[in-house]
Length: 532
Image 1 (cartoon, helix red, strand yellow):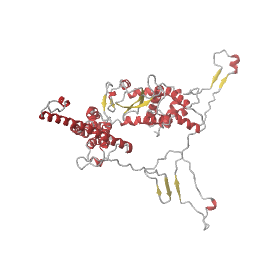
Image 2: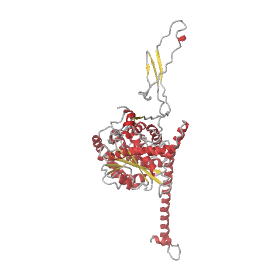
Image 3: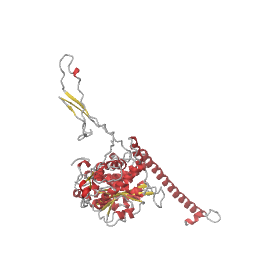
Image 4: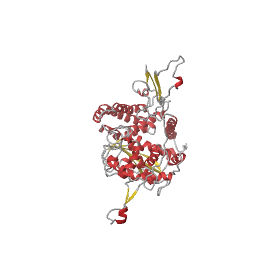
């Protein structure tokens, strides 16, 4: 009897006792199925609550205790985080005598290269003689070093340009030569403004490197006796983009020539954008180079997360595109997609946390171990040349992948699909080709962490400034973030580099922008964190 009969009443006149028994059995089976769905949903909600609790109150690190991953030798230990040891206070004291030397520990701060001011403490003349009447002599020194900070100091540079004239030409000149001549004066990046290259570089570094929004900077200037409004600083930043945009465009040309591009995106709020609500989410996209080649980090503002944006930005690029699983990158033509194992691993890590401590041997630990094995191999190959890394991956990583794929296919049949483990398994199976493509080239990395690290500076800054006012301001921020992050990537001091650009670019005799790129060998040494 079909399920349509379950809607009927059990009237004893209409049905025999056999029919009534069948109907009751069908109803019981249906009720059991509904109850199973409810219990499954309840289990998922409970697991989600455990995961959110772990994220809220536990460690944010995804590092795994290796003692938990002895899958095939011992029973699983509970998945719990281990505390990081507290970093010791840096040792700054050195004691020297004629007999022995106590040097600072290995974890001491390196103070070499910093200017030193020496303060000596000697006995006054009346104490140079011992109570016995003989003169005391020096037998050693006790040296204590302390790091001294001088807060930002402000001054005014007054530019006086002298104007010259020839009295003879004034009276008798025929106009063939100029009568009035001005002394040569360098071009300024910000004419008509009190802004100097160093002042603008300072404002930019505070906002885009240190994450200090303009309204807080305004208070800082005020405390130092200078009434500089946030509007003035905003104008300086917009004017700075005029000089930085050509550098950005040239870096983009070089980025598209690289063997690989790592990409990511995150949200940003823009208050005044035509046709959109103030609370609507816009996006900051990030594209950056890989380990080999110049360090290039580029941000691009767009009003949405449409697949058209990466397709347009990456037009002409023909290498490897390393991303997470976002489908918006699928339409980029001529590239080879490479997946991120950090995202794959994160799914199993969350499944372990969602299982909680009550589950002794969560199945997710097996998946987590496969991922950790791959990362362990990569750690061993950290300093290998690309060709050696390529060959070692085929020997060591490929067998792990093959075993993992068999485990994934078997686990998919056994686990509940709508669970954290089920989602982690589906993620790997649905993106297996992209996740396996790191085997194609020894220059590729196992994860997209390189892009995530670069975009983190913007995410931290966003927590402080919260939003952009206009799309133009968001675009300026994208350009400036690109310059300062690329500077850091190439071992430059952002402040010194920006100051150099704002000083040199207005007076450059060469139109070759390559001399000003962050990886250029022609940049002065004072722009670098370490001298060449």
